Image (cartoon, rainbow, N blue to C red; front, side):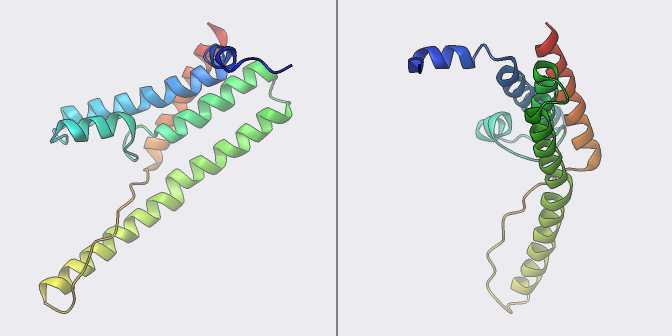
Length: 159
């Protein structure tokens, strides 16, 4: 029997895996925002809100925190030999690899393209529209995010 929608939402907000995921992501975004705020890199209220809820890149990795908290919580809840844990671990490894590898290298490539385009435009050789520079992560930012997610996952699973 399917539960009414309102009951399903209530149960979702009582699920330790879901709560760990949300809390780890919000914690990472909050820490990232505080670091940027104290280093003077926030110029407007809009930028502050973007950092809190949406912007990627920086220290710590919210993607890594989220997936590591999910894997940790599932490991506690279902056991590390369960199929769902193995699935969550594989998903976490893909996300973490993407955060530190693919996204970082594509961001560096976009930065280089923008520099070349700017120089060519300054020399009046062409009109250039900059490409979006996606911020990937440095390995330390990803490792820190993983530790944050692990500890949040442990906390939500044991407390």
